[in-house]
Image (cartoon, rainbow, N blue to C red; front, side, top):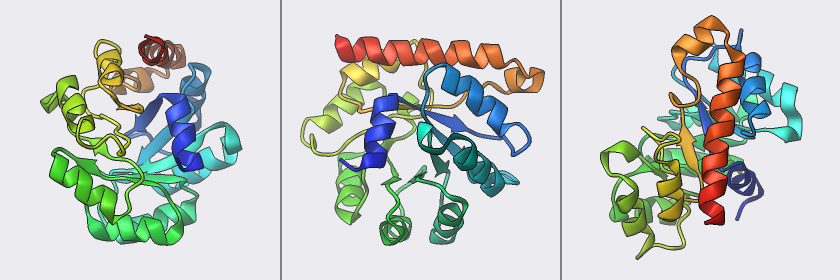
Length: 213
């Protein structure tokens, strides 16, 4: 397993920082890091996202693996690479994105929903697959994918939180991706960093407990 992917797995939780700009991204990331999250993706669908990636990479160094999420095309992969992103996550599988990530040596997790999509993405060069939207399928779907495709690391994302993350891990997920459950907009607006730390601690604990079980 790639070193970066191993770091993501060790974190257990990949935080999705959607709508978090460069002005407060370090505060948000610090709060999540205090809660035990050591893998974070800045989504590439907001203004200043490359600046946010650069800030996190400079702030945390090896302590946090920083990626770019919601990547839809190879040009965005290039921008992510130049900003210092260490991995790329996509909502869909696009062969050009996977090829661009392979070209730059960046681990990539395309979004998949079916065994066919998962296998095609993996054979195209994906390092792991993001099962998305996880809430539409549930933990049983992850188990069903793992059955015939045990070689493909899976990261369910979308509607994942402390109430179901354990079930996804028990079903065979290598890690989970979480956005709203970790970084609710209202908490960021209030700058309630303690709440983010508490949410991170809870989710990390759930994942760790499921792994031990």
